Length: 465
Image 1 (spheres, one colour):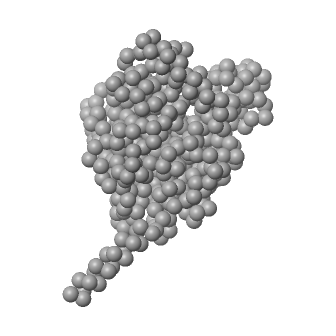
Image 2: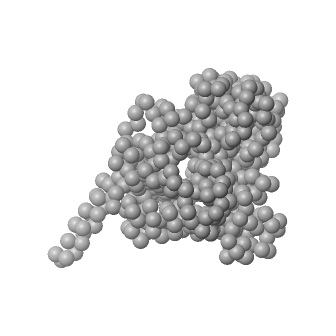
Image 3: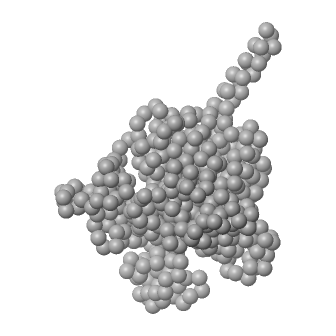
C-alpha cells in the first residue's frame, strides 16, 4: 500500500513538473510543399508521410491554414515576427530593386523576432536549414536571436553538402555553421538537417529550447539519394518522382527528431508545429496543392493554403477532425509566447492571435480578416468570402461554398467586392512602403544584386530567382 501511495505521489509530482516547466518549441517548416503533399489530408496517393501525420493526429490540424506570403522570404519574415511583414516593408523576396539608395534588402534589424524574445526568457535557440532573409551577415540567424545556426542563406542550394563547392560558391550558396563555412563531403542536405536537429536537442535536453527546423525540401533543385529515388521510379513524370523522394526523406528525418524527443522523455512538453512557407510550385517542382486553385507566386489558395498542424501532448488534446477556423502563420508567435508564459508587450505589435484556447477546445477563434500583398497581387479573406487581385484581374469567391475558387462572383456581388477592397485599403494604409523586391515598377532604384552593377531606375532588369 505504501509503495502504491509513493507511486501516486511520484506521478502527481511528475505531472505538476510538466505543467510548471516551460515547454520546448520546435517549428518545422517545409519549402514549397503543397497542401496535397501530406497524407493526413487524404490527398497524397503515391506515398505516405507517417511522421508528419503523427503531429496532426497527436494534436490538431487546420483545414484552413495559411502562409504569410506566396513566396519564401516574406512568408518566413511574417512567421518569425508574428506580424504582417508588410508592416515593415517586406513584400517580395530579396532582389535587385530597392525603394531608394539608402535601403538595405533584408528583414529589418529593427523588427524583433521570436528567437530574440525567447532568448531573453531563458530559452536556448537554434536554427537548422534555410534562412533567405538578407544576404549581409548582419541579417543572418546568428545575429537575429539564434544562438546556434547550421544551414544556408539563399532561396535554393545544391542538395549535397559538397566540400569543394562550398568553398568556391558565394556566401549565399554555401552551408554555414554560425558564420563559418562548413567543410563537409557528400552529405545529403535533408539528412544533414535532420542530424543537426537531433544533435541540437541532445545538447539542450536539460533546458527549455526553441528549434527552428527549416527544410529546403521540396524546393528545387530536385535531388535525392538513390535509396529514395529508387522507391518512386515508377512514378511519372520524373520530376514528380523526385519531389516524392525529397518529401519521403524529409518525413523520415522529421521522424528522427520525434524519436529523439521520445527517447529523452521530452515529447509530452514539446510544442511541435509543422507547416510550409507557401503553396506548391506545380511545374517547377511538381508539388501538389490538391484541388486548390493556383500555385506558388499567386494569392489564390494554391499559393497560400498550406499544411498546418500543432502537437503539444501535455496541453492540447488529440483532435479526431480538422479544425475549421482560418489560421495564419503570423498566429504562431502569439501562440508560442502564450504557451511559454511570456508577456505580450505592446512593443511587439503582434498581428496574430493566440490559438491555444481554440486548440484546447476552450473557445472559438475570434473572427477576423486575413490579408496578403505580394507586389501587385493582393487578397483578403473573412470567414466566408475572399477577394483576390491577381495578374491584373479581380475575383470574388464564396470560399465557404467554393473553397477551390472556381466561381468568380465579382459581377454578381459588386458591393461585397467593394467593401472587402475598402477593408484591404484600410489595412494597407497602416503598412510601410515596399522596401525591396524583383519588380522595378514597385521599387525604382537598382541597388545591384550579388555582384551586379547598381544604378538608377532598373538598368539591369534581368530577373534571376
